[in-house]
Image 1 (cartoon, rainbow, N blue to C red):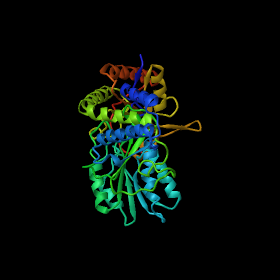
Image 2: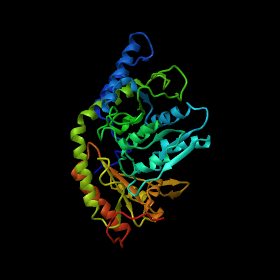
Image 3: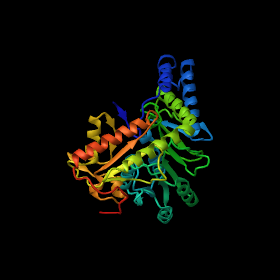
Image 4: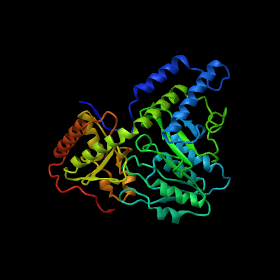
Length: 395
């Protein structure tokens, strides 16, 4: 039995996207910048995909969608595209639970003299809007807060945070890679100026993403060249995978009303069964949470015999794919920086696991996975006692 439960890492490309990509590769392979018929056919494909992706987030104008190589480039374009407008370093605000595409990019800005405020989060991983309000300065030019946290599933109060930033006059960016296609997004109502998307998180091909840029927002491009993508992302567009992204976005929008409640039911089923396993602690916000996301940590992780990585390996041997938050650097396991930022002890932060659900996930998959996880933990920890619960901040 093979059960894939790592849909936050990537999703299988859906057959409809593959079909359109095959057509493009064989019949509409022109350079979209060329003026002849072959080029114009390819350009039409690009613009159709732009309309489809815009539809997923209800963007008023398709031209506000800038295609990139993925969510990481979209995040970098948002951060660096704003920063490069200024000759003198300014102030930027992010949360302490950002994806590395944001946190590492901001770290680079910091080396160049920019002032950076990293907002703390509570035990559930949520930013306090009052903290954001207090952190804003006269020279704050950009705030970037992740919409749905990929490791612990917490959904931030983006509308409330965006209004605070908007009233201050700074630009507001959010990484919505994990949210798009799983929760409704309406950028005409949401107070965001920049929003990042990724194709392979919504059953499109890998290697393509997009940055939504609200009309009137100015960015400095990262790449010099032919001026493609409204001058913001030079380079010949990857027509086949952009087309696949468009199809995936359109289908995700159509299926949202039925798929989201189905995922929520499966998610809650998983949490209910995992609650019966002593020593496993739910992480993230139980209520304001991504529909497909289940995350826990081991109260008794030791980083050696028992850790999140250990469970990933053990479940993989059983044909089940999940992921862990802790990372291995130079042979040594490092605690999850996200769990540490949320106030968990280093010991608990070594034991984080993530189970993420998708279109092919069934109730039987959940039940089997929980049963295998119980068996693994019983084998690894003969004395595994106590009741799972949210733990207080322990350093």
